[in-house]
Amino acid sequence: MSDMLLHIQENSFDPLFIAFAVFLIDGIMGDPKWFYSRIPHPVVVIGNAISKLEDRFNNPVYSSYYRFFFGILTVLIVVATFTVVGIVLTGVFNQIPGGALLIALVASSLIAYRGLFVGVRHVQKGLEKSLENGREAVSHIVGRDPDSLDGAGVARAAIESLAENFSDGTTAPLFWFLVFGLPGLLFYKSVNTLDSMIGHHSDRYEYFGKVAARLDDVVNYIPARLTGLLIVTAACLHPRMSGRGALQGLFRDARHHKSINAGWQEAAFAGAVGLSLAGPRQYGDQMVEDVWMNREGRKRATAQDISAALQLYLICGGLLFAGLVGTAVGVVI
Image (cartoon, rainbow, N blue to C red):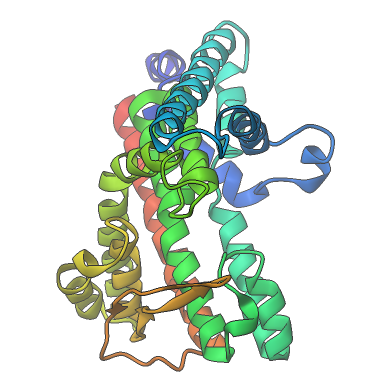
């Protein structure tokens, strides 16, 4: 027993050992509002840094070449800064009692499993009350114009957000934490926040945000595909889901999605639940043309379909947690 406790202590700072605690803390607490009303959330800090650099470098009077160059510089500054912050924090926490728990607490703030569930659940509850309530709730989790959505559009938007952000908000951060610890996690969140803020196709960001968008594609490439396979596995465990449909969606539809990564999650969810997802959608005045994931599925999604998607999401979370616990046990053994 003493040897086992000693082995656990020796590995207490190993990301492979504490990743399950990171996921568990997020699943239980999420991002407590009372706490982050007193101190800024890490993602807010990253976002503020990006905003300041953009104000300084993304000048519309600059040529496309200079805006592209300054976009690269912005990415390098942000990613390097917060990766170094992760290295410093890890070094400090390694020197103090309970440091592993502090690493887990900081890392859990950069996971969004619980927050995504709550956001999508609000859309379901809102849509059950009225279309207007559903539109208001979905406006908090997607960028498309809520007034352009009917009830089915609101439901599809919520499920698509659940699918895509499962990878961005949970599996990808955990993947990078497992590989490189807290520095890897902060590296990923820096890249992902850069993409969400400046990685858009628009006059303002076409050149300035191009590198941010491409780098985000790279860092999400493996996690997106792992998430797709996780969704297929979860669908096989749900008595009313189609694991076969989810798997077919991966290999038939995912590669046709506008995003090289999001298609893996959306195609798997679409096939599992029996819906058609993605397709043409409107963001403000811009219409984004995209192919349907699972074209043969139903397009008239409902609040009940959101509930089914959330059940699938919870099974995915259970599988992910079990895998992390198994990894931690393997490290000890």
